[in-house]
Length: 132
Image (cartoon, rainbow, N blue to C red; front, side):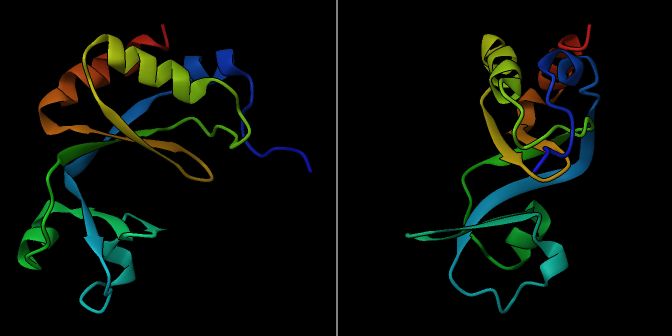
């Protein structure tokens, strides 16, 4: 089966086009999804310890869900293949060089990066720099 999306690292980096999504986002652990609507969940991943979800901070506050990290959500607009080699390393290294922690979610069409809210502008600049 041929990969869907771009696999050439040079092309991926030249066309990253980071887009900042509006809002503040948090990672929470839940064991019961009853209070949540599927459209409210940005991402969900089941781990042995519980279900990690990414949701808007406002919703977590309203539901009294604990969190410890308030993030900005940056989407890389390039349609990179899940089989692409080196793209995650390239953008995470660019962010690390600026002292920025990143949490990465690779979805079918795009990579999504969650960075500390205070680092948003620096992260956007670092990612845009990869395209130059």
